Each structure stands twice: as structure tokens, then as C-alpha cells.
Length: 479
Ligand SMILES: Nc1ncnc2c1ncn2[C@@H]1O[C@H](COP(=O)(O)OP(=O)(O)OP(=O)(O)O)[C@@H](O)[C@H]1O
Ligand SMILES: [Mg+2]
Image (cartoon, rainbow, N blue to C red; front, side):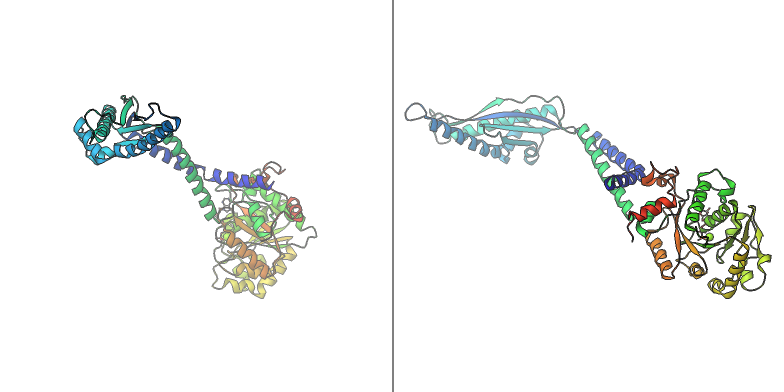
């Protein structure tokens, strides 16, 4: 099971960066194609030389030991001669013989001479851009070197003496028909392999450097909190999705979330809920509006309160005004009744933020806030409090002690693990009752996760009972 999850993790990284991997691989292949196409073809021509040692033996016939000794000697000579073939003096003689316009150093670079193992043979290979010239040089090398060895052997001997060592060209050079370099197929395979390996490595590095929370399972694993349900991406222009698109997957997700909350709230003690998240723009306002709406649609009286006195927006989601709101109530300017606005959803009312106040945290901490909440609780079944980002300002934490529970929101691929865990820690410090978390704006590629095949809900949702039983089995690691 763990191995399957690991494999799924790898596949997910590859799938996430598939375009990068494809682009880098294509770039490698295209570069290889370009370089291969622009490479000068190189031809190779070779000869084989036999190193012969003719001996006169005292007894007339060589003994087996003499013959063996002679072969060993020839092999050793083959090694020495291989070095001599690639010498400057041999190169000069070849240039003189063939008339090729090369310097000795350039010519030596083209010639490779190697003894063939366990034989008396030397293989001389010549590489050149011109196939005919490769052959010419190879043959000339054989002839020149044969003559060089003869001269060495005859040096100091009388005219009648036979040289003891001779060189025979056993295989002359032929004009090569095809180049040996470049090798297009090999180059392409190598480029493909290098491109795939390096881009996959890059994908894993980028994934490692990306510290945002991507899926619910990951958030559960690192925080030890229970997921109340994840919210998919809501189409633009349909912010109040439970009303604007009741059959959409997002509306379905909010209904599921409400059901999960009902499991937690089996004794009906949770009535005032704070919705918070670490950073800005993670979806608190949208989430609060839809959560309040879905609860109201199920038959409860709900009050949605915009406790974000710094960046009021909840009224916008309901298409209502922000002229009078919580700020007016908290400075004692208006009564609750005067600030309440009815929304288009039955049983759901709104208290907007109201005019900007210089000291939001003080207002939210005031006794009037306590009185306001008490009165609201007398009139409504549930009160949903939308708050500003908890890591940036203390407003949300101030409200925690006045609520029955907190829902922690994180935005998929936006909220960092660090910020999420920091907020969880801060909530722990103020003894908040964290009901669970919800991952917002989860794109379809992250929605399924490991439970794709057996989540009954079909949208990658786990019910609260599933999560709770997973916790009981110790599936999650508490951070
Ligand atoms: N599930 C979602 N799918 C698509 N867009 C979303 C989703 N949730 C929020 N958004 C968009 O993200 C933006 C920020 O949302 P919202 O105002 O609710 O965040 P917020 O956490 O309240 O921000 P702030 O911290 O500034 O109060 C809005 O444009 C909203 O439409
Ligand atoms: Mg907001």
C-alpha cells in the first residue's frame, strides 16, 4: 500500500510537470538533431600489418620453445611498432609520399595504430573527412612503415644478409562507403535519454522546492487535523455557488461539508463558527458565504457576519451594501436590527462590515462584540464569522475564544505548509476548538488523490466518518 502511494506520488509529480518534461526532452532531441546534421562526416579506412620474425636455428629446425619465444617476441615488437607508426618521422614520410596538405601533428591525430591482442598483427586506422584520402593515407602508412623497418633491419648488415624482422601488409585499405561519425540514431537515443532524465530530475527538484499544500491527504498528514471536505474551483461569476449552481460539484462539496459538520455537532453545541486561514485571498469570504447559505438552505436560521473590518467583501458575494454593519454596532451607533440585511436566500441574513474602523482588533475584543454575539445566538441557529488573514492580523484569534469552533481554510497550491502549521500552532495556543480544515479551490488534477477508486462520493471527498476512522486506525502522522 505504501509503495503504491509512493508510486502514485511520483506519477503525480511527473503528470504535474509533464509539459516541462516534454519541452526539455524535445529541446534536447532538437539540439542533437541540429548538431548531428551540422557535423562533418568522418570516414575510416584501415590496414593490417603482420610482424614477421624469421630466425636461423642452429639445429636447422626450430624447437617448440624456440617457436613460442619467437611469437612472444613478435607480439612485443607489434606493441613497439604501433608506437613508431604514430611518430613524427613516419608522419613526415607519409606526407612526402602522398603529398597531403597536413602538418605532421594533424596527420598523427588521424592515425591510430594498435596491436591486435594475442597476435602478431597491428591494425592501423585512419580517420578523415575524405574517404579516398583516408584510404590513401592508410595504404601509405603501411608502405612507409614497411620500408622503415627494412631500413632498420638492414642497417649494419651485409648486402647478402636477410633481415630478421619484416612487415607484411596482410590487409590493404579500401575506400569506405559510409561514414563512421556522426551516428544519428545513437545521438537521438542519447539525447532522448539525457533529456528525459534531466527534465524529470528538474521536475522533482521543482516539486521539492514547492512547499504549498496540494491535496487534502497531505494536509491531513502534516497537520493531524481532520478534513471537513475539499472545495473545488468555483467558476468565475458564481461566487455564491450553492445558489448560483446548486447542481455543481462545488455546491455538492459544500453540502457534504455541512453533513460532516453535523456529525461533529451531534450534540448541537457548535453554533458560532469562525472561518479563518493563514494568508490573504485563500477564500475565507467565499467559503463563509457558501457555508452560511448551505446551512440556511437546509432549514436553519443563519447569520453571516463579516468580521473583516479591514477589507470588507462578504456583502459583495451576496450583492448587498456595506453602508451599515458590524463596525456601527460595535461603536454603539446602531442596533442589531438596523444592521441586519436579508439575503436572497431564505433564513440567511447578513451583517456587513460597515465603514472602515481604525482599530478593528480592539472593536472585535470589546464587550459590545460579546453582547452582539449573545443577541445573535438568541435569534439564529448558526452564526458564521468571516475573518481577515490570521497570520497577518490578530482579529481572527481574538474571535476564537468567543466562538464554539474554528474552521481552518487552506487554498490548494497557494497556502504553504509552513503557514498552515503556524496557524494551527497559534490556534492551539489560544485553546481554539478546531473543528477541522477544508482545502479550497482544489483543481481536478488534485481532487482525487489516493482515494480515487473507492471514495463513494465521486469527487474525491472523504466523509467525516471516513476521516475519523482513518484517524482511529492511526493512518495519519501527527506533525
Ligand atoms: N474555490 C474557489 N474557486 C475559485 N475561486 C475562488 C475560490 N475561493 C476563492 N476564490 C477566489 O479567490 C479570491 C479571494 O477569495 P476571498 O475573497 O473569498 O478570499 P479571502 O480569504 O476572504 O481573502 P482576504 O484574505 O483578502 O479576505 C476571489 O476572487 C474569489 O472569487
Ligand atoms: Mg475575505
